Length: 304
Image (cartoon, rainbow, N blue to C red; front, side):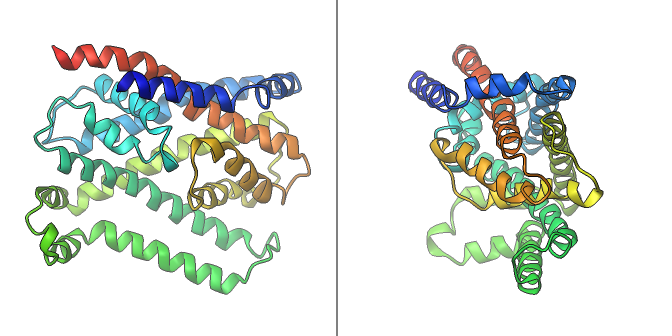
C-alpha cells in the first residue's frame, strides 16, 4: 500500500514539474541576480519542517515518546502520503499511521489536527492584520468594512474554538454517536498554557516559510518598497488557504493567488508565478521526494 502511495506521489510530482515548469524555471533562475537568496530559502526548508516536527513531537507526548529525528522522518513521510489528498489533509492520518503505538489512534489524530488548526489560526491572524494595513493603501476593490468585520469574526471564532475546548467537548458529548468515543479525551490533555505554546510554535514556523517566500520573491526581482508591501505575503497565504486544492491544481491556485496579490506592487508576472512555483518545489515537492526514501526505512523500523 505504501509503495502504491509513493509511486502515485512521485508520478503526480513529475507531472507538475515536467516541461511546463522545469525548462522555464531553469531559464528564469539564470536571470536571478541574488541566487544566494534561493540557496538560503532552500536550506530553511529543513528548519521549516523541523519546527513542524518539533511541534508534533510535543503534541504526541503521552501517546508515544519519539525522538526529534523520528518525528522529522514521520513528518516528511506524511507529506509524501498526503500529497495526493485534497489540501494535503492526508498528512494528518499519515503521520499517525506511521506511529508504532496504535492504541490511541483516534486521540493521536485529534492532537495532530490541533497542531494543524493552530497553524490555520496563525494564518488567519496575520492575514487579517495584513488586510487591515493594505486594503485601503492599495485600493483593493473590496468593501473594506465587511471584509474587516468578517475576517475579525472568523479569527475570533477560530480562537474561541481553539482555547475553549472544554465547552466544545461538552457539546460533542451531547451527540449520542460521539458520547462514548475515546478520541474526545484528547481535547482535555492540553492546558491553555500548552495550547498557547503550540500556537507560538506555529507562529515560528509561519515566520520561517514567510521568510522563504520573501527571499525567493527578492531573488526573482520582486521589490518590496515598504513594510506594508511585505504584508502582502501573509495576505497571499491566507487567500491560498481558503481555496480547496488537489495536487493537480495546487500550483495553479498558488500562482493565480500570487498574481492577484503581488500584481498590486509589480508587473513582473513571470517573477511572481515562478516564485510561487519555486516555493512549492522547495517546501512540498522536495520533502515529498525525500519521504519516498524514508517510507522504506520506516517499514523496517516498524516491523522490528
